[in-house]
Image (cartoon, rainbow, N blue to C red; front, side):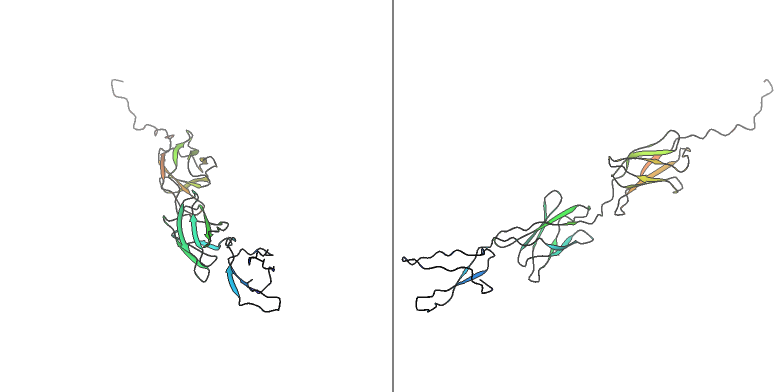
Length: 239
């Protein structure tokens, strides 16, 4: 084999043919050297033959997605084709591993939603590696919160939004009056620090784990403030 180890011997049949069992299996696409030696000990010139390539490349390593989600880098078997798929199993980029084992794949469209990308290498013989995985950056803000309601007593706000996001409620003076988390089912109920009962506008935003903040949703507080006491009262002369 390529490291000059003896991997098989045998005898040529009367019809000139031979079949040599190889141990261990030779299936890495490398070159084997074959010589013939006659009864007098004379050895032929070397003949070469390539083994089949049945070994898949190792999984790609050192995977990183650019901060803008437009490229993916890593290392792998030189000459292999790199294929990147998104969470929906759609191909979003391909490239070739360079001679120094590095690769850079342009991603289209940009992968910037925090989802998992899978990267595989395919060698010239069609063998496919195990997948390497890497998360894309999360640059996508949550959707605006919906179904916003303030409780009749002005002490809580409820609604729906991206699970796991942080909810921030601000009053008309832009002061934070409540925070909390969206539940796994997408719902939230936020206790307010003080009664919001002046019919003023409350704004509600969602911030995901990557720090992206949604557009604000708006909801009016209930009007719980009674009219001021009447003053300057008088009764006209007729009563």
